[in-house]
Image (tube, rainbow, N blue to C red):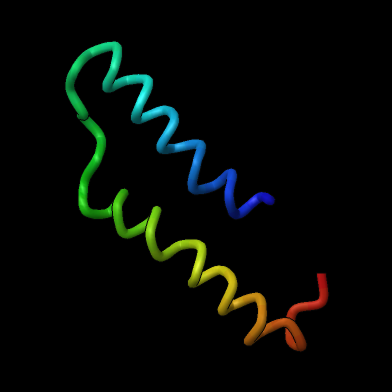
Length: 55
C-alpha cells in the first residue's frame, strides 16, 4: 500500500499544479526515474537484504 502511495502522491501534486498553473515546473529526469524505478529498487533491496536487516 505504501509503495502505491509513493508513486501516486507525487503524480497527484504534479497534476494539481499543472491544472492550476497550466505548466509543469518540477518534472525532471530525476523525478521520472524516481517514480519509475524507486518501487522496484526498494522491493529488490527488501528481498535481497532481508536476512541482514532485522528492523
